[in-house]
Amino acid sequence: MANGLDDVVAAETVLSDVDGAGGHLTIRGHSLAELAGHWRYGQVVRLLFDGFFDELPGDDELEKAIGNARVEVFERLQPMLAELPALDVYSGMRAGIALLPDGESLADALRLIAAPAVLTPALLRLGRGEKPLTPDARADHANDMLRMLSGTPSPALAKALDTYLVTVCDHGLNASTFATRVVASTQAGLTSAILAGLGALKGPLHGGAPGPVIEMLDAIEASGDAAAWLRNEIARGERIMGFGHRIYRVRDPRADVLKAVVRRLGTRNESGRRLAFAETVEQAALDVLKVAKPQRSIQTNVEFYTALLLEAAGFPKEAFSNVFAAGRVAGWIAHAREQQATGRLIRPQSRYVGPVPDLVA
Ligand code: ACO
Image 1 (cartoon, rainbow, N blue to C red):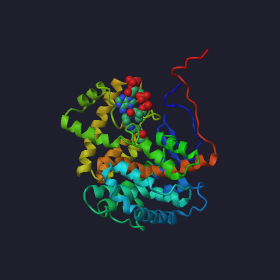
Image 2 (cartoon, rainbow, N blue to C red):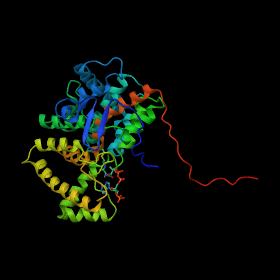
Image 3 (spheres, helix red, strand yellow):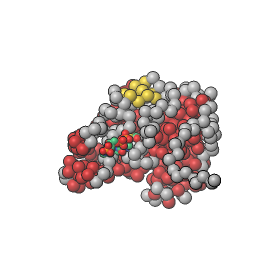
Image 4 (cartoon, rainbow, N blue to C red):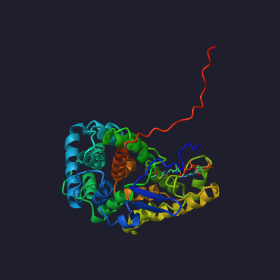
């Protein structure tokens, strides 16, 4: 039996397909290349939600509704915000989301889309002793998220974050999406299902990897010898963050999309210097992993360049998983609705391998 359910098909979905051998990602009939950098996040939310909510409006109307939802979430949660920074920024976001109504309507879904984008900058500002900024309902989602963090962003940064949110919006039956579907299969509300996804995403084997990627880059820079540092990590039984994937045996296509975004942010500034250094670390890691784990094709995954992009966008590393959640929440909601529509409870079996009771004669 595979402990990690490898190769088990646990759902049929129209939402996304991960081709691990070819390195392709399809989202509702569109390739990642078609969507990333070309569609806005709000348009992709509509693409994913289509058919799962009765009263879904057109793109422009839906983006306005997401803007209104940001304002509504801020107003609802503002009285509690001061209590949340005592937690780490991910747990604070999760706690804030847990306070939202647990329904299944489009309004419930839009509040959940809005919540990570509103709570993350608010908690970061409170954490550094600044007042949270009120959302602007008319602004583009990514632009507003950055504005609430540190004032009006450059169009290039807003576009970079928008492309990131689109790139991570959905990705087959990953751990957090599966967790979301399990809870949705009980016919619990969307907030309960999304809380399950948030819990699963936090771990370093899933969405918690990009923060440690920054720590790794800093440690390697300080050490001055990438290959030696990486070899030592593997010898200590550690995993190299931002490398390897359960499904991809080739390069994760999202890594190249995000690398190109970081490159567009400039080659002569700090993100350009960071990118050049990261490229040398990436090559060293691929070389070291090839020798250390010859039985496994371990390639760069989405988290490696996520770290660089979110760092360039001004997010501290402890908030990277929050921003991942801000993108992935659209996929979680669509998967939750798709699972609920099947009406089928997810309930696998376990094989008992524990001690057996003594039989009483
Ligand atoms: N560094 C070092 N060794 C690795 C790595 C890595 N990043 N990834 C896999 N391996 C090794 C394992 O140690 C194992 O070696 P062994 O056979 O000598 O024991 C072998 O490759 C197979 O490992 P599995 O755990 O079976 O591979 P799996 O497909 O389950 O792993 C995972 C996928 C969890 C993502 C893994 O590659 C990993 O831990 N990567 C680092 C963390 C990371 O980047 N996470 C983000 C993933 S992307 C995302 O979720 C959005």
